[in-house]
Image (cartoon, rainbow, N blue to C red):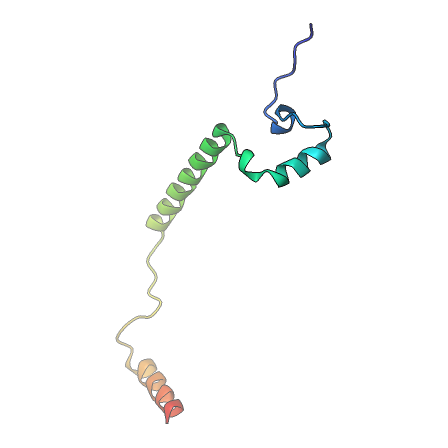
Length: 89
């Protein structure tokens, strides 16, 4: 007896009328509730997202703070206020 090759492919584990890839794609489309990601894949993706969020948070903490709208500039803020009042009248 020959041994079957180990596979992670779901297509090989599903037994449908024919063994053709097209038929499997059609079956998967018709039965979405029976097709789920493997626990291994879900755990891997969850871990990747967690690591990505940690790296992003670390970058945000390490980044310098930038004053986009500094307070206390009288000339710029007064001219913009007067412009906005002209449009309302």
